Length: 148
Image 1: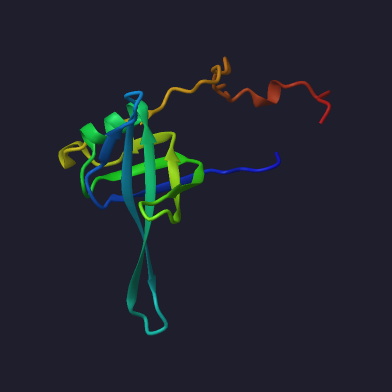
Image 2: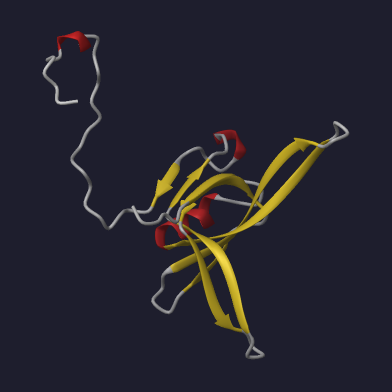
């Protein structure tokens, strides 16, 4: 494998999802997700460091974000990190780095109002026919002439 670009975050939304539509009527949701780290400093005092992430979801994933997520929702996102470039109104080049959400899973309990289910954008790649194999207790019945 030559490279891997994959981010996985679990955090809380800082605001309700912002959804707009492209000219082709494709939904695009922009989300602000906070992840926090707690640690003890040298004096033994608890400190918290919060990092904010920009997440963008497209299509049906964006619509589900709009329908079920709200400020404070606990959610899992997975996808590649991408940097985009555009020109602002003054002609200045601007950049933004974001996580393109290919997988989203709501982690709040049902009582939390956002449900506990998950959603994954359907893949364009064909599904593998492989199924999980259950390993029984008859491991000793294997042949001794395995090549490894």
